[in-house]
Image (cartoon, rainbow, N blue to C red; front, side, top):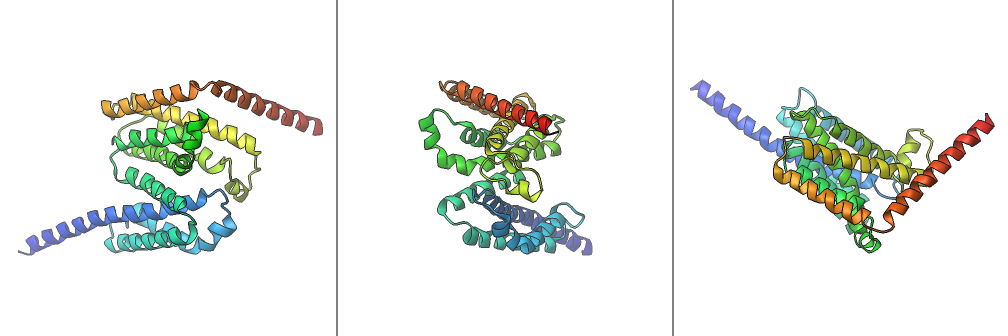
Length: 293
């Protein structure tokens, strides 16, 4: 009798933990998505948007680390505290630090970009589907009419592309794949999305890194993002873990992007001018530094 009661208690606890894992993923994704939305503001400043919340943010980060990356990850009380804290602080920040409806929509997109990889299997169709969706919004800059039409969509989906690429690598590391392509793509998109943002250099200033000019950041950002797109697409197409439907989505998406971008008359010339300007500026700086020495 005691053994049966013990088994029932363990089964109930396991069910609670499973439900709490799901609720914890929602709450944590909400907090992370809102924080990333604040970070990706064009006018983001550490003194204004980051430092005032460093106490509560540090507490949530500690809870998240102990809840998901320590031996205490199966403690129900810890998971409950983490979920409630992350959810409440995420909601407070969403309505107190996000100024417009567009920013709140962007936060929901980023929340989804964290949550979907979190709860999906490593070979889920959601990864290639969201990769193509967010990648298209990120890279489709030509023709000009389409670029202007998708401007708000691109602002909302740009950071989500980085999260999906990183999420693909994290799930790939958990799965059976030994491909290095997701790691290369994740590193490139992370550096481009966080350190080489064309519209904001606050993280470089915080790290004490010399801030390149906006033109250099734009060119470096574009090439790293393009490289990450190629690596991730190649991984999806070459991996045996994904279904033919997933590969078809990626293949059609890459082909459509290539035709729309390379088919625009100005695109090759824009790339040529960007490469030439970047090379000339780099050589000029190297020559100037040699003269100074």
